[in-house]
Image 1 (cartoon, one colour):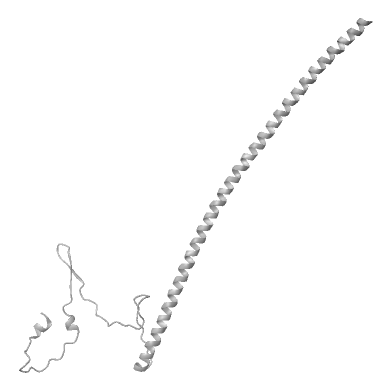
Image 2 (cartoon, rainbow, N blue to C red):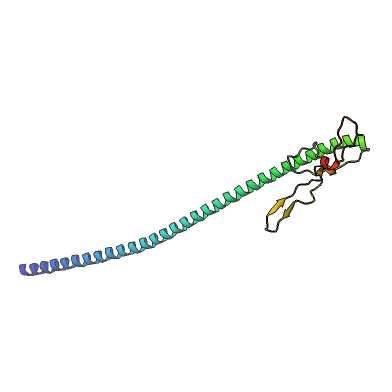
Length: 186
């Protein structure tokens, strides 16, 4: 009977060793499967995370571009507003100058001409409202072109003729008589 007990124990021991090997193989397979699943999940998560990072970076770049464009638009609007304010101030200044000129002109012309207003054209913003220039006739000929293409500026020699010549005084013995051609510079 001792040999039967020994044989049974031997069979049980071999079964237990086989069961342990089988259990180790099953555990190893499960661990390998779990590692593979974890890597697959992590790869998907990493892929999702990288896609999200790319989206976030594109979104931040787009936001930055939009912000720069908005700042540019604001700067342009500010410059336009300043330009409009400057133009409005210039218009107000011109209007004020016109009012002052017309009031001084109406005061002067009202007493002289019976209330008729005369309006003169200004040459610019900085032109003085009260100062009026004498009208100068425009030059008849400004320049002359020679045959070789050179332009020669012409001077009016009849400016003295435009202004009324002084009345001739009767010749006396003490004043010499100057011919009219010398007096006119011809």
